[in-house]
Image 1 (cartoon, rainbow, N blue to C red):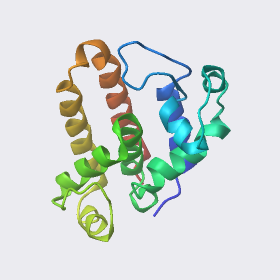
Image 2 (cartoon, rainbow, N blue to C red):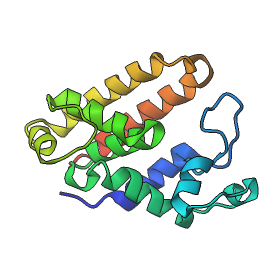
Image 3 (cartoon, one colour):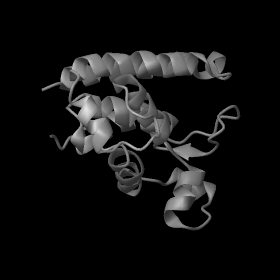
Image 4 (cartoon, rainbow, N blue to C red):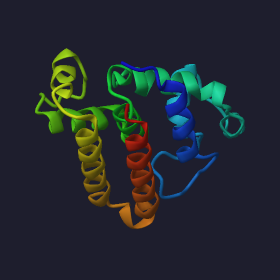
Length: 170
């Protein structure tokens, strides 16, 4: 349907920002949205804090493509919906984003988007699915114990994702 990966990656990286190591963030050391653990899994070795500080877009782009975009079948989703699914996948895990989409369309919520889910997605308008993803994501955030600490930023990100996704619709 579309090939929006590069555009979606640019928007995603605006949300993710640079290096952080917030004491209340269970992800720990993170740069460009990639946690130290995820990066170590990707390069198959331990990395230093300095290596994490030095990450570039070129370092993280293949991780986002493989672990989130491709895993959630974003190339098979309508423009806008692809970004909604992708951004939430990066922020909270591909399984959570996929399960939310599956629940919304009435598919078996197993966290693996496949032909059955995609068929059900195609029976819905992208605008409707984008709006439902926004509401499901907000409800998820508000149920987290760290919402008091991070909720304002998460809510802003979710709203920005909704707006950008709706603007992207074909």
